[in-house]
Image 1 (tube, rainbow, N blue to C red):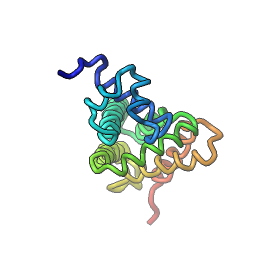
Image 2 (image 1 turned 180 degrees about the horizontal axis):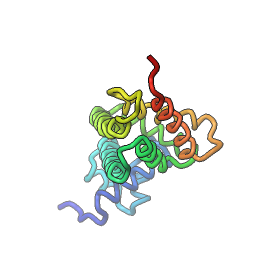
Image 3 (image 1 turned 135 degrees about the vertical axis):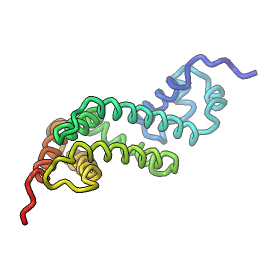
Image 4 (image 1 turned 90 degrees about the vertical axis):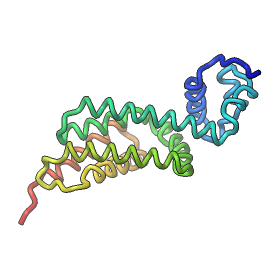
Length: 190
């Protein structure tokens, strides 16, 4: 007879994700997770079978959280260029300082290795770029796909910030994206 659960899977997966953020995916072991949650290693193996499935489930739960955060921000911002900037600045707030941003790149590697997690990323890209398209549609130089271009600018601004993190990431992102919007706000000549 299986042991009764003493902690919901959601809490265990949150603890697993926290371990991955702190120590990288290689630092997530059943022993480390057992120490963090108070559950036995055997109970964890029974629930999650192996490390690959544990990582995948923890990252699926993290994607669920990002999808929820994105949906909340999408509802709260106006469908304007300023709303597009606010949406992406809002999504940047959880990156923290340079050390946590750099550590999170180790987790991104796991997303890229797993086809299911890559599909989650592609779906999120499509949702995010779609709402950005809506926000940017009124710009004089807007064209189809501008939302994806802005999302790419956002991701690039995070990378460039990481090489010289003298200001908060949200301030750097806001400056970068405001310049991006200004470039497309000019009427094309001709």
